[in-house]
Image (spheres, helix red, strand yellow):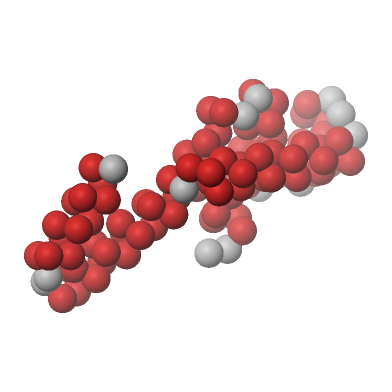
Length: 102
């Protein structure tokens, strides 16, 4: 999965656990496609500060995912459902349902 997509998904899942400033910077960078300079101007810090904030935020999101695995479980469930639909295999559908319950 490309980094931009992964970060957007991680932000959706764990974004509430970040500080408001971190969450806002990630939104501006990954979802609104603003440059470091544009973000720096908006929040009133240097480009380097924005870069450092984004890197720390990305590392924090990855740590949450490593411990909790919500995104990985969601991706596994999606893959199971896609495979079940292709094969019309109801056992796979049942397994995907069990994943969703967890």
